[in-house]
Image (cartoon, rainbow, N blue to C red):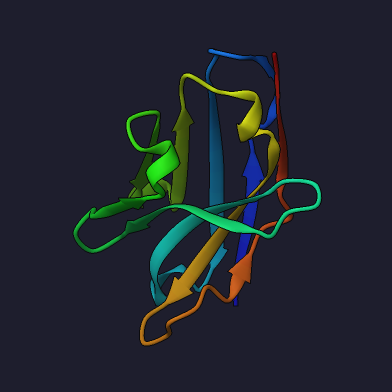
Length: 119
């Protein structure tokens, strides 16, 4: 099992920045990738970004490219999401997730952290 705990959400004005953290514990050596997702009220959960532990490769949703940066700290088993130039449309609950080696889906999820961007 892998446990994930997010932190860093909050209220920010449009154009501002926030950094989310996701601390992983448990059998972290079984995880190949970490991802950030978000879900806004009345909308489906959507992929934001992912980070591959082995080579540091990153992937982003088009709408956040150039504004969000995902990174990982192996020593701390922590993944970060730096969010700049935030927009009201970025308002959502943000979730951290882990994908294990050999699996296609993210099977471990954090509890989520609220990000609210005011106009």
